Amino acid sequence: VQLQASGGGLVQAGGSLRVSCAASGTTFSRYAVAWFRQAPGKQRKLVARASSTGVTYYTDSVRGRFTLSRDNAENTVYLQMNSLKPEDTAVYYCNTVTGSFPWGQGTLVTVSS
Image 1 (cartoon, rainbow, N blue to C red):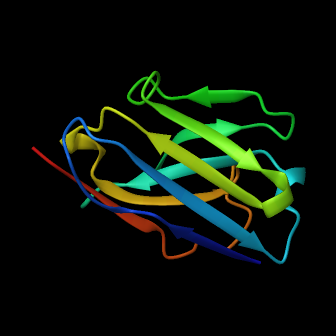
Image 2 (image 1 turned 45 degrees about the vertical axis):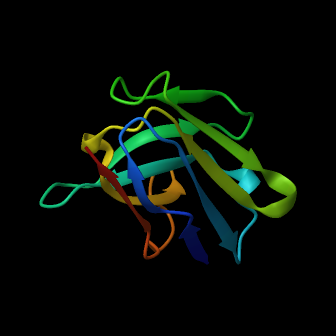
């Protein structure tokens, strides 16, 4: 199984970005999936998750600004990030909620003030 995240980049505070995660070697739609992020010097943390039936949950820090969606036909999950803040700067990863698969490289999101 491989998880390939992409779409990160440099954006100004208040801007938007959409990151994607394509899964290969598995049928991602079977799983509850999540986006995690790891800021410099900090542990990886879950920020958004979705059940296999589409029920979503967001941590307080991103609720109302981030939206997780999934395209089961493309075996891909997305994270739309709006109203970005410098504290959102991190490497973003996707995986199952329990981290079942090998972690990919992630995609770096940098928010400048």
